[in-house]
Length: 243
Image 1 (cartoon, rainbow, N blue to C red):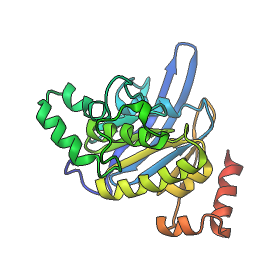
Image 2 (tube, rainbow, N blue to C red):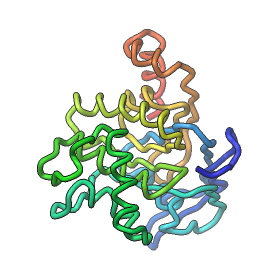
Image 3 (cartoon, rainbow, N blue to C red):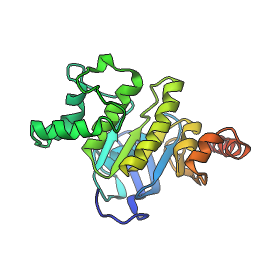
Image 4 (cartoon, one colour):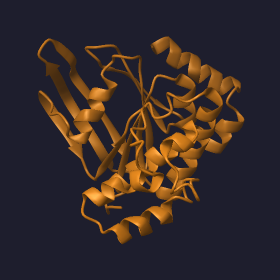
């Protein structure tokens, strides 16, 4: 982890415009994520959410405005993208191998983390032998080993069935506490946003703007117990009205 101060903006977009040849995705978009936060970007499909992640990752550059990122970034997409001919250990250790770590260094580090993410004993299995939740855990761990500071999760649980998805949401909160990462998560699911987030940015359709910034002022353990409480139901209705 880097020594960037807690509660300082580790991600910052200021007055960003992004235009492609035939489309303006956004004209004047600003947002920030503080170190240690779990922030959710909530919006419908096609609203430019993934474009924001591509800007943060450095895959593309803004047409205008400022994008600042203070730390290394790992980017996990909805599809797990595990290589079917490689074992879990080989898939997870791939970013370490690509950066030049020795075979023994890769194995030592992967074996250290597999139990933390609930994959103890699964290192020699192939993706086809894993459940959907286990595949996402393997993909998550590979993302963790790609970066030391910031995780971008783009609809990371969107392909899972509802029960597995709920289990993975709880698991993600546990992992955040264990691994101490800053997490920026994309979803179109209001309930997921309310359950996971410290803050929620609600984004409009393109050309996109930030429609609202919502602080979710509930303890996470409290939220899990009170998911259908009047307070949280009211919050979900407020978000739905914005969308």
